[in-house]
Amino acid sequence: MYYEKNMQILQEYREQLYQLIKQQTIENTDASDAFVHSVSTRTGELALVVEKDNHQFRLNSRYNPQEEASKWAEQYHIKNLNTVVVMFGLGNGIFAREMMNKLNDDNLMIVYEPSLKIFLHVLEKYDVEDILKNKRVGIVIKGINEFEFPYLLSITLTWMNLFSKVECVHPGYEKLFETSFLDFKNTIKDNTFNNFLTKNTYGFKGKSTAENAFHNLLYLADSVSIWDLDKDLPKDIPAIVVAAGPSLNKNVEILKQAKGKSIIFAVDRSYETLLEHDIEPDFIVTLDADKKLKYCGNRRGFKDTLLCKLESSPDILDNHGGKKIIYYCNDFIVSIYKKLGKKFFNISPGASVATAAFSICVNLGFGRIVFVGQDLAYLGNVSHADLQTSGNVINDEKKAIDLYVEDIHGNTVRTRHDWYAFLRSFENAIQQLSNVDIIDATEGGARIKGTRILPLQDVVDQYCTRKFDCKSIIDNQTPTFHKKELSGIYDYLVKSRGNLDEIIELSQQAIKELSLYETNRKNNGQMLIKSIAEINGKIEKMPIFSLIDEYVMGKGANEIAGLYFVTNDKKTDEEITLSNAKAIFHNMIEASEWVIPLLENSIHKYETLL
Image (cartoon, rainbow, N blue to C red; front, side):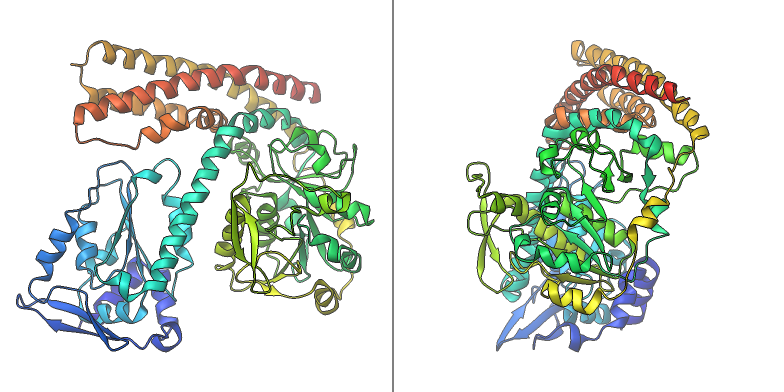
């Protein structure tokens, strides 16, 4: 009755979902034996009914479905800014519509439907045009685009608005789809967990990230962009990501056979183990802002090619004497590439150096990626390969939360809270890489869903069959910025120095206006909020703001999160918002004054290069 109309709307407003649905059939995406149909109610509306395992589940009232849905929705209150509603079960849309109608302009909603049979039946029998057209509503269907669910959560629910989340379950769905509901809850839990890690990272490393950006800025002059290298690397040979899990000691010698017939990306922590076995990786990948040299081979002047985030540890970059290839940098630095007409866009590193190495391989387009040493779990009490070979065991029980996950043999293995987050990060990414062959050749550790488990020797025998000289390709790379272009970097830095003075001046203006409001509460708070927003908009347009923001996010995380919370009292909300804003502007001034000498030092260094 409505199928053609609904599908036409899907094609127009949700093209990707439309194409995925067209490619699938009920039989190969929904293995349940449930029978889905609709019955008439006393009000003339249709009610959804599912018959499963000799039980009948009525998902709507047989009397008045609309009234039932309206009363059900009354229990949920959407009052905070950037609230995200996460709903389990679309049903026939009547409950979801009630929640959708509660959304404010800045709110979003994600609906997870665990049954393709129900969704297709609803497309046939119900007019859901308004839901399908609504750009603030994300729709995830199990077996069709469920891989998008963790991604949607990650981009909409951050640590800043996490506690504004509204979770709801379509009546009847929790019992009808128990396993899917558990998966739904676990995915939300994983996102919450990752957000706590992210907030802690900002708190601990926000300032050091900004400091490193200026310290390492001089290395930009001689560096090579990952995208300059990209065009010269063959993508039809294996890319081997070597992490530092304890299982690396089992098969590290086999990597010698892969050398010259694959591209070896070694995470910094694994570098020492490879050197002990006389293996030079093609690339060393580093990420962390405060990692010590002893966790990256512990050799001053090492020359193996370094793939680095520009804000990586100075202890590593300063002691590196080889080529530096940049795969990620703060937007302040990205603007330099754009200003001088260079191709550059960041490769998102994820939360660990191993996820960074994996992300690099994916973005470069390798068709086969192999994990080695990617345990993401303890081997007994040992956490890393270098600790096992040295006879030391790291005692991190007091600072880590132990969890248990399935290992590659189907047994239970002990992991750590941060490794668990990395594991889920890998799995969420792998779900979206249907055209990439991802092999886990770790031969131990946690099971990474979506990978093929294969011994490293078999990987070498089957896929490392063509000789390839990666070193010559790297040696032939010239710096991204030519000598004559360094003046462009210098000019950009000088202009940014002026921007810092502007940020301080604008922040002082904002604080003055906020202080006047505090002394006279009768002033119009909404007009002040508009004025503050305009000031903030001017500041955010300046490229240097992205580095100032690193500092502010680390120092003022609680004030930033507080901007999203709203009470039922308009005047109270104004006062809370403006009080938090005042603290943030004070932090901006502090950050700008802290950055000034760092930037001036960078300006001086580039001046000597001209």
